[in-house]
Image (cartoon, rainbow, N blue to C red; front, side, top):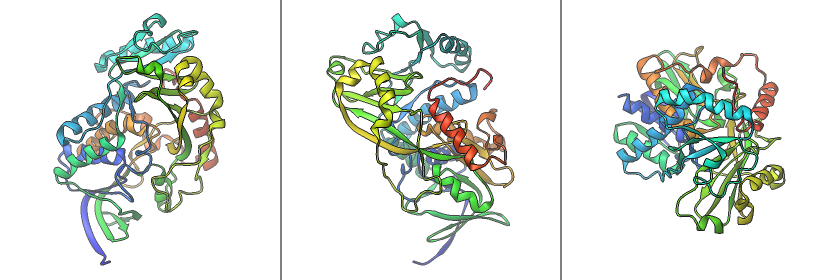
Amino acid sequence: MKRMTDRAEIVIIGGGIVGCSVLYGLVRSNRTDCLLLERRNLASGSTWHAAGNVTRFGHHTGLTRLYADSITTYLEAERESGQGIGFHSTGSLRLATTPGELARYHALAADFRRLGIEYRVLEPLELEPLHPLLCTDGLFGAAHTPGDGHLDPTGATHALATVARASGARIRTRCPALSLAPASDGWEVETASGTIRCRQVVIASSFWARQFVRPLGISLPLFALEHHEIITGPSERIGQLDFELPTVRDPHAPSNIRQEGSGFLCGVYESDPVPWATNGIPEHFAEELLEPDIGRLEPHLLRVIERIPAFGEAGIRAVNNGPICYTPDGLPLLGPVRSRPGLWLATGFSIGIGTGGGAGRFLARWIADGQPPYDLPITDPGRFPDGLDADTCLRRIIRTYANGYALAAPDD
């Protein structure tokens, strides 16, 4: 194959929901001289096996904006592209299993009012009409965000990409970025088919990012963990309903559980999660799932069944186990690498579908305008100390994952 040299103002590495969201945000900011590189297919990596849950609930104003802007972004891309994203507007319930959780939900109400997001804190008796299959024993209430739901991650990724292409941006699939090096006028990205020279680079390659930037002397605080989801068979109780159930996020399990067709889909956050590929992602890893281990999930599933007995009655149809990217605090690395001008990060997303659209919009405005559209220090890539060694980083990641849906402290 003849090698070539190409040019672009901005190169994005990674064609999952986050990379395509950044590309979409850039073309909407009139930055169309962009080239996205994807080693496999669009929506590869973590996107293709994601549950697709989206929410407007966040424990920090800036983070809430990322969530809310994600839903807005995906729906806009659907309208502009004609590519369906399969959005189910079911709402969601975040359960309060302690008085402290209920107090935190009430304390957050003012933030949601300022952002114009519909939000209510419900008493246990108010939950039955919304989710008649939910056992409310021991609950103190729940936070309700009616605009939440779930969507098709692959459809949303392609909707974003379709709009970007139509606006003049370029996308190359089956074109892995092999290396990255600084140049006199920006950066050089080496691929199997040639070199691409650009002024700016956005790393949006999820769990691949750590090893990709290591030759630059950059140690990113992120690793992948195994993450299970359970899909049940049909539920007779669901079949008797004339509406779709809201998603339930339970900090006691911890888990999220929603309706999937006539059954349930449940994502489980294990108490003792298992790291994956900590010494480097296998070179030929593609759209693959890992070997499941349902035994590790049993304590959590028993709690899910206590809360939603119909889940236990439906029977397990499939158990999926896929890698998911995490940072020590569970929040993404979103912004510039200040020691490397022109290098940007959009990686470390543990909730890529939930925050990817808003993150792409946020980062694109920062790149286009030279300053962020609003302050969001909790996702700044420089928030971790330079001396954070891999073992400490991984221990913190495991602890954060195991906490599941535990609320952050009010000042976080």
